[in-house]
Length: 214
Length: 421
Image 1 (cartoon, rainbow over the protein chains, first blue to last red):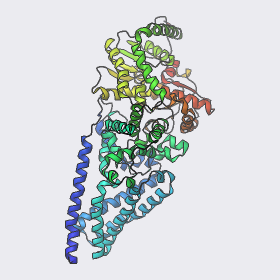
Image 2: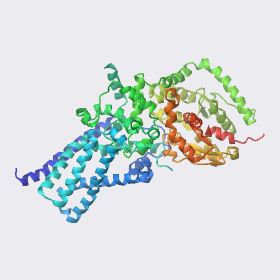
Image 3: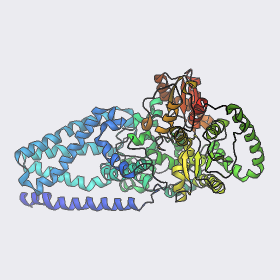
Image 4: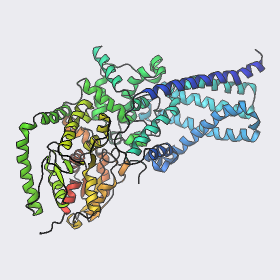
């Protein structure tokens, strides 16, 4: 396989296979979860389940509304920048391949600038996990691997954006594909469960008139 | 081997969408919940953080339900049930967690740690390992119903004595404590006179069409997560409400009893009840808003603060009503910080107050509450839950807080003004 064919394979076919794999696994998991019995509220609502759900989803964007973010605003800022970096890095896997025309030098620099903080925050998170006894106590190999592998994903993404060599592009795409195969099984898949959990918790708290607080 | 199989069977029975969501990869081990827990804040023990407690159950569940954990358990920390695990679960679920849900509201993901530990409670009860006293209290409630024919005359005599006390306090010989008679309101107390006399005074002063239940509201079946027994305890109240043709069942100031009757029991029975369920707090607030009670707030002259019971507030949705009642019947009121949905547990919830083998731990777990009370400089703490009442009283005594503690209805009854006619 020559380098052009190899690049085409990792940019297109491999990504398509990996993405399809991820979607299939997520779908199976979502269906499995949906089939589990659910003890829905039966009593007349005191508040609004819908408002509770909206508040539940929205609370992560409103750090003042929850003590754990309000009292640790630096941690929330780090969390936000990290996830912005993740989002941009994921978007980049699509735009870089399928809409290269929008990936002008300015856009590449902006993407890199949004992903870069995530690398520094990732190291800070690693330090925190190793340094705090309460976090060390519950951490597993998957936790450390998730952090480190994301660092690699961010780094190769930035290098591919800025240098755009065959080595960095192929590294970036190979790591992305590896992620797409692995992520549905790891704790990184928390973002799928997030939508289920916040819906269920928000609905219950909203129904009972607990949130949003009057 | 048989024990482990039974545990897995019991876990399977309880594996629903709430448990399943929180038992898999939802938790990222971020640690945002750690500082929200009054028990971790009191002890600083890494094993007492919400995430550590949840992991004890989660890792066993993941071994079965999570694919990666099934194939590579060491990678995700998943594990098979080992000897000694159930004893750890007893500590985590019954001693080191009051199911207060403070971790849930602080979790960025919405992990329901109390659901996992509640599942553990149910499994432990099925395995005969839950605290004996909690099972005894559950069975005592069932025994009361089974022996009501024998107990009723004795109970009626006791209530007649309490009725006399109500009449003396009110200066009204017509004041009554009707027992299980036809009425719009069926009031369900606890076994203590402090949940009967003040409520009776308030109902009589408001000229309510009410009657008192032969049973008490407490339902320890919830604490041991024995739903069949919990349902049985609720059922006697449903029968009584039907018998007296009550439109409203009013639950006394008991956090878990309100939570059970208002929110949990309809789920267990699969339907709303034919009567409305309200807390006494809501009824008292309603009476005050409608001007049905004459009050003299100066009778409660000391600085008062309110402790939000977790089952009333964060899990039950009642925040403003007790505050309205207290402020209407007090000279001076100060809010605890934090309060309402963010209030800290007193440390005695979910049956911990009844477990004498863990008294020392329980009082340590109340350290955060002690600081909250001190910071208000209040001389009186009012709360709306009997377990909180007992816990805060003990915290007051052991920490020389020099406070008095009462429930909301006692506090309100103290401010009642009775007309001479």
